Amino acid sequence: MHSHRDESPEQIRVAALYRFTRFDDCAQLREPLDRICTRHRVRGTLLLAPEGINGTIAGTAAGIDAVLDHIRTLPDCAMLDVKFSATPKMPFHRLKVRLKREIVTMGEPDIDPRASVGTYVDPGDWNALISQSDTIVIDTRNDYEVAVGTFAGAIDPKTATFRDFPAWFRRERDAILGTGKTPKVAMFCTGGIRCEKSTAFLKQEGVEDVFHLKGGILRYLETVPEDESLWQGECFVFDQRVTIGHGLAQGHYALCHACRRPVSEEDRASPLFEVGVACPACHGERTDEQRASYRERQRQEALAAERGRAHIGAIRSAETDD
Image 1 (tube, rainbow, N blue to C red):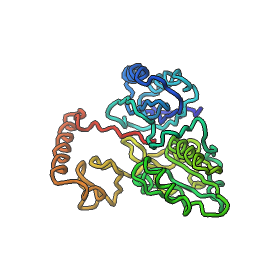
Image 2: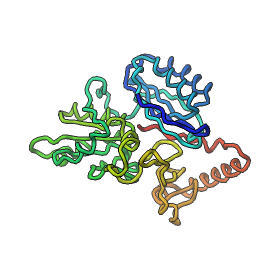
Image 3: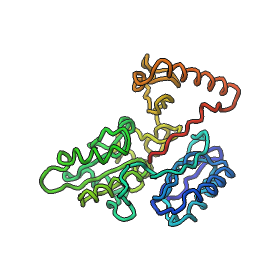
Image 4: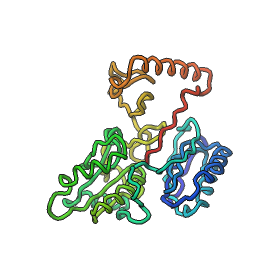
């Protein structure tokens, strides 16, 4: 179990968690989970599905501990995978406990990470694996996540969602793996959950030598010294911190509240960027009417902020994709 880091009183603890297990009645689990989060003023998103639980939540250390203690009492959740970090202010506007078909959507109903999964690689051993000439490294995250940071030499599938990954792999398989001896395939994602599914998928597709980064990029950035790191850039996270760097330090990206993509300092200097309304990536994807609506929402949020309270329009918790 990962140890809790020392925190000053004003810090908020953030817990990214998941567990693949079998839940026969997710609806029955939802209400008690929602209740204990609410009681302890924990916010964020938790997804419940027949295949398990996934989410990112934030609150006081005591509040997070109480929620995690409850989750560990759920069927086969004693070994829940949790990664902790800290932030000076609450990164979520509200709590959402949702019922879903999958805790991370791949759209492959026969994939079961509990039955077949790749080999876990500890962060301390990751550099050696991905530096080998016979290792193919694949980033399983979405295109906007890869754009802000990835491992040196990793293949970017340029997928808009994780659901696109199986079709991409089947289409590009020969180009990726070649026609001779099958190379080792090392895959990674933010916290590990997408790799649980993607390695299980590759195993089902007949690829045997499959590896994935244990604890994901988050654990790597926390434990591998920056001067030894092969990570380049920052890591997108699904909360209001937007990106983090080595040592889980706050990154330099903001979030476009129109399209939920990260925006760099260069993006924010563009004439196509307008706070809460548009960024260079989505400006051409929205109509004038939509931008007018976003502009009014932004005006209302600014007024609410001046009054010292959160406007309902600001409550846009990030969809947990990892």
